[in-house]
Image 1 (cartoon, rainbow, N blue to C red):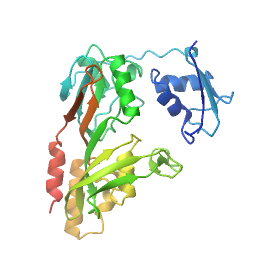
Image 2: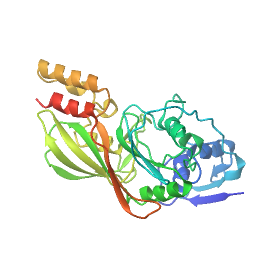
Image 3: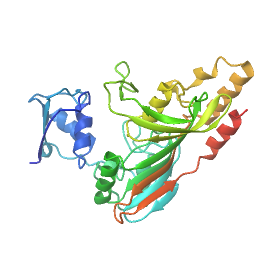
Image 4: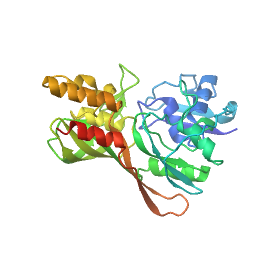
Length: 319
């Protein structure tokens, strides 16, 4: 029997399943949720739901052999992947927009993992069959660099780098408006919205979230910005950009969507709306990534150029 026990001292306000998946890296979140549902994981000696929000001094206990890891049949699918780098430890992919990272409800096939399984015989299984090789995630509509682990050893090494914040990341984005300061740091905690659990918001009681930014170009209605997140919260850049008054262009979820095209002269509104419709997603791209190679210990970095559609978007609104 593998038994774990935790007492909450500082990480209040977090879902119990997310807390456990963050602290037990060798077990998938899906399995942890199954343990909670079956009663193999309890808080203060009683059963709770995976969505239970942790409070100060809560005691969590979990026995991992109470529920076997489900064996999923992840379909192998031929896929044209843009591979930036590969060796026997890692794979670096330039993910296109609209490609979901791993199978889940509503996306049983056609994901990056399905394509990876087709091309690579060995991928890490730290996070279970459905997330083979997946160390971190990108939103489906965010394009750019994503890192894949081929062995469990590499996976755990990379996961620790993300946890200790030694991974250097840079995203390129098109945001609304012109920024008063061309560079700066957004240091605002982020939490899940109480009114809509699908989105996040700035909340002083949330998790520490830090994003540095540099304005690369200012246009009449929008700006091209490089964002460097120092923490890795869900939707962090999108939330911080929106909080700053400069939501990501095309980001319907955080105020950067079609409604922002209104209020200009008619021809401008038409041009902006057309550009947004043609682009078809939020304008965010994972541009650079720097890590310590899990096997050689060397610092290595990768760059994924802006997609042609992104470049065309910038040119179409730079009027």
